[in-house]
Image (cartoon, rainbow, N blue to C red; front, top):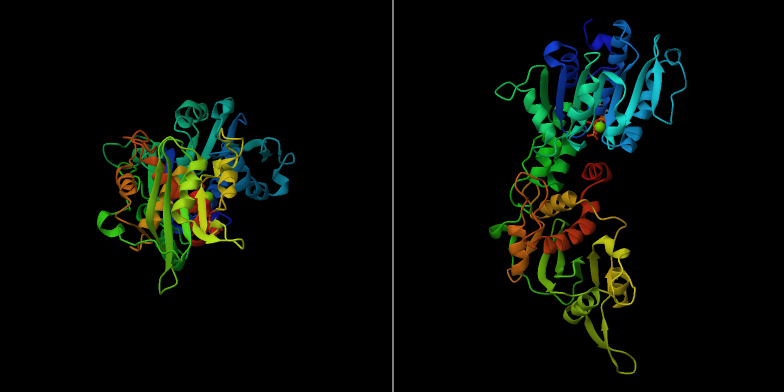
Length: 447
Ligand SMILES: Nc1ncnc2c1ncn2[C@@H]1O[C@H](COP(=O)(O)OP(=O)(O)OP(=O)(O)O)[C@@H](O)[C@H]1O
Ligand SMILES: [Mg+2]
């Protein structure tokens, strides 16, 4: 059988067709397709499933060998693929109604099973044989799933597999990509390719230019250029001594913004003021840092009010301090955490001092916060939107020294540099992420 546009009911783009046509050959039993966001990865998988069913029928493969679409989690799989799969096959091919309980259906003259699975509890998946396996968003799956579970399941029927996704550092996805490349890392039976979002042809150049201006350079390369970026070294790599340090003193007439990490020792906050550029863009300056050893939220709130509260007197001439112009962006977990003093939550304590508290239900993932902080220090189009006063010496040290653990995408917290970086991250992310990044782009921040 020849694969080609004529044999598919929709037309694949040229790069999708290259991935498709490489399939079902001895030298490419396991294919790895590394592609930028919105390339058309999931779309490609639908055609792959359709062909696998056709081959299973043609080759009279035993129905004990199933055909699987897998996503990192069951929830994702059900959302991304199950509705598409249900529309796939003509009703005459379906033996029973698609089963919602385990996202499976029996199709074709021999009742081959097509199943949609999530890989979060992959040990529970052992059992059947597999004729074809396609893993979407492969960089998000746990490294053991292939060798421990999927590979053995493909043995009986000499099944084939396709792994598709956007890179996330030099991890297990990178490793299998290398197996498919010519050279010393090549392994027999493996084939791999890489395509950028532009090459996918589903996203306009303007949209890509807009993404470039709101993402940091490394994030842009990873998400749109399908590049395996290394996470070694400095976490806040976009911070630069020469480019990011700018002196600016406190302006009492302008609002104050504070990022706050609730760590007890030290409790850490970074203090910012914003400015509008002639082009209508907001830039922000860190003017201060507050680091209180063995402290609590009450002490931090008091310190903020002492430094930045506005003193006035009420009708009776009593001195008052107003703090409503100070917006605090704390770690959202402070909404439920109760400190020892009186059973109030950290956030309710801040509010009791008259501070404006801006928070969300959920903290962004550490990685997303770091990425976003980098994009404020330097966008991929070379603009800087966040600056730090030279007086903030501990913050500067933290931005420069906070680093990833060797061979890991986990930051090293042993040096204590995480607290000020976290504080800054809460403010920058919650204040600017939703403005800078539209909904569709925010989705990948959560992927
Ligand atoms: N060959 C094609 N013909 C027509 N439309 C396509 C084709 N390939 C992809 N698309 C459309 O482009 C959009 C992006 O495709 P898809 O969701 O498959 O991309 P993706 O790479 O999986 O994206 P993400 O990175 O968000 O997971 C979808 O609306 C899809 O229907
Ligand atoms: Mg997809």
